[in-house]
Image (tube, rainbow, N blue to C red; front, top):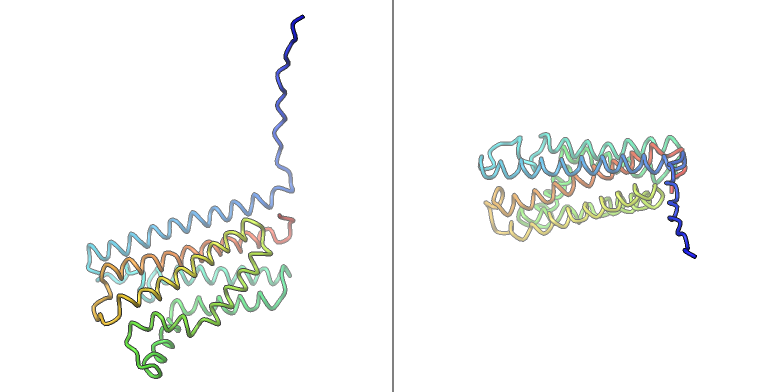
Amino acid sequence: MAISERPAQRAPDRQPTAADEPERLVARVVHIAAAVAVAAVLVQVTSEFTNYFLFDMDVWALDVDADNNAFAWASSVAQFAVAAFCLLLLLAGWWSTWPLVGLIAILTFFSLDDIVRIHEEVASAFREGVLGLETAWGRLVWPIIFMPLLAAAFVLLWRFSERAPALAGRATRIGLGMLVLAVFAEAFSTVFHLGEDQALGTLPDVVEVSVEESLELAAWILIAGAVAATVLTSGRRTT
């Protein structure tokens, strides 16, 4: 007697439920932030190399390391956005008061500093007046002087990432890694600036600036997206 075979029945696809909506919202926001970060990096790198190869670094608006142009503004806005989203989390009672207050204060300072370059002025005064070192050492001196502030921001954002929705937390930690690399890139550039008065605007300088500034801008955009996603889901259950 022939044995009849029944085709295996396929389990019905699981339909999204209301419980899945916070995770999907976090994913959408983080993915949008990542796309914006990639686009921003492409614009910055294209601008810097166009300025180098076509205009001999004479176009201020295309110099991603210049003060008070659109690129400095973009980085400042990204940092201030993180501070603003942290303020919303504070008002919502999402986390303890003091960690969020600390983040808001530090990130607001960073946002202002990106425009007025406080860290460069302080480092320059210390380098010249106290250490008596040449200009190139300023790239190494300022991270040392501001290390307590940088470390505090890193620790607070890392603690935020542990409390945030899973994908937002990962995005924040990736952003923090990129910021660490950006600081190391600038510190390392001291090597080819030492004893070289004309190092600014050379190809090694252009490459270093492109890497450093792109890492920094992309990182803050990604972190801003992660904190924004957390704000949007702060009243909902996520995993």
